[in-house]
Image (cartoon, rainbow, N blue to C red; front, side):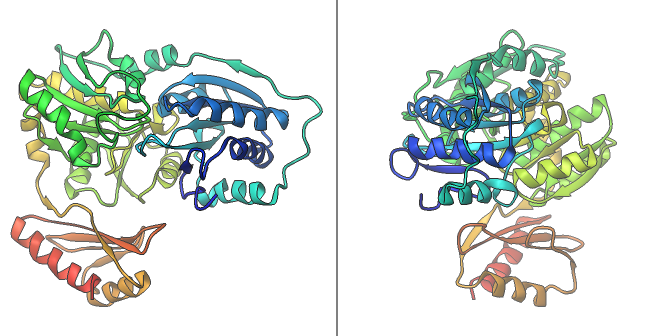
Length: 439
């Protein structure tokens, strides 16, 4: 079981660290923790997702819990099913962008509130390890099926307000983007890439954060005359975007575009993660919204959104969260927002994002260090003349540049993000900080 209980989900290699026996115990532990009566369960296309579903369902029903089997669906669909069907919780069986031999469970409470390490995953681990399950129920729970896909599609399509036809290329990565993209049918003119379900990921890793995985959709867009291209990750709760020239658009810039589209309809709070460009905050303000900064990580962002009744949040990793999807991700909604913006303008997407790309970002730079706290202390001591805050790691704002240094949850790594008005200033300050971090 080494290390399968993570900060945000449960994830391991099928048949090795994650077995069907363990899946059944996780079902029992989840039901013991939540005292739930009705749980919706979705799964991805990996060949072992079905046997893991059957094992998980055995554990849940043994504890008297009724299971609503959503079958194959995207992770955003499972969240929507949780809320729509008024369930006590949900489980999505997926290992997201991990290679085909991996699988896992994403756990939620009612209304798609995520269960993270500190809010329940460690409790599930403890119950599994100690086998301190509640006694089996006198009446075993039932398993029923429910097709959430048509209702999710109808729900998401309400976000499409196209002024003219928009043509896009969609890299589905042989994964659950195939289901998520069904929302585009009849609204967007789209051409699929790698549109056959295959849990071995035969073409590339399903991870739009790895820029080499975007090369296929970049090539397709450059050859085909598209307004833009998108690439989903394995369970379709993240998306990467390229413009009509096939150039990758940073995910924080997409956050700004989506905010612009939503704020044209109504005003409200928009969260952006603290690694985002200054321009994201500026665009939200310019469009009459209330910008608020969030910590990194979906469990934190979703809670902050609920606390402030925020309409939208975007994360640098390509997660886009909507109040209209129970404060969870919807890659299809994000795509419609970008398409709306493109359809309203006579300019191509590259020209629409150019004014938002006002600064030069370092990108996230990882350094392996012996003592993460010592690194943070050196930074606290050196940069006392800036505006310092510690929402997540150490952030410091100056008049003309800013940086954030934060520690990995799981490894002896520190991550640097930095932005300045010019390439020269960015490089100077990046090198200065890396020298301090790597002392």
